[in-house]
Image 1 (cartoon, rainbow, N blue to C red):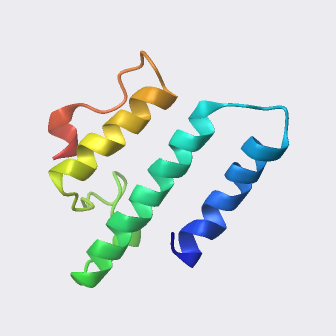
Image 2 (cartoon, rainbow, N blue to C red; image 1 turned 120 degrees about the horizontal axis):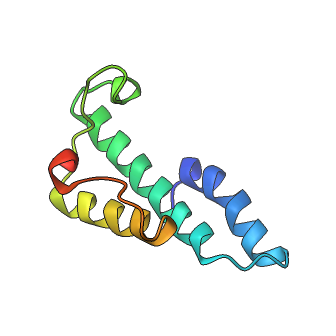
Length: 91
């Protein structure tokens, strides 16, 4: 794990490990954040300003299809039963 992602993931991991809160969704959320960091790094390598990749700016953060599947799996686990992201929207 990189220094940047460790900085983001550590508080969630510590909360999970040291408190009485044993919530699997925290682990899933850490995985989601790590995947987002990976996607941002890949975009940056391609010269894409990932800070502008969002619905508000209309710029898409490029994702490999495997990444989309992984992200959807994490969202499904965290928000079980909710329709969060359609497959066509992830493309």
